[in-house]
Image (tube, rainbow, N blue to C red; front, side, top):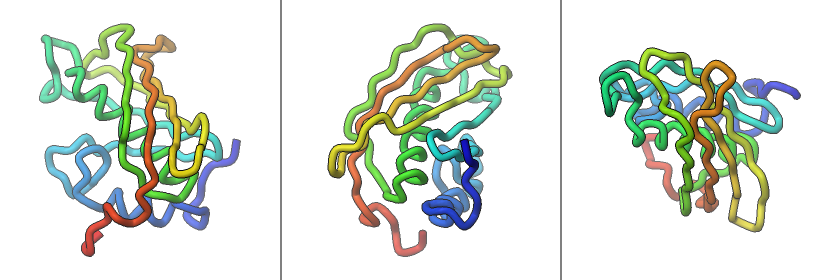
Length: 151
C-alpha cells in the first residue's frame, strides 16, 4: 500500500481544502474537528480524540459527530483517490457500540465501486481493535461546482 505524497493526484487540492473553514478538516475553523488524514492508494485513515464539547450522553461522542466523521472520511477517499469533488447522496450508518469521548478513535474509508459519476464507499470507526460504527455512502461527482472562488 503506497502512501499519497504531495505530488500525487488529488493531494494538492486536498491540502487547499484542509486549509479552509471546513467543519470536518479545516484548520481555520475554530470549532471544527480538525481531522487529519493519511492517504494510501486504496484507503484513507485518520486517528482522532473527540473532546467533551462533542458528547451526547455523558462520556459518549454524539452520534451526529460520528456520522460527520465517517461522511468526511468517505468523501475524502473519493476526493483524493479519484481526484474529484463529490456531494453526499446517500449515507447509511450502523452504530455498533458507543464511541467514548477522550478515547483514540481510528477511522478508515475507501471506494468500493464506481459507476459513472457515482462513487460507492464504505467506512468504519474503531477503538482498541473493536468496530464501533460502519458506514456506506453514495457520493456524486460534482467537479468543481462546490468550490467557492476563495477556495
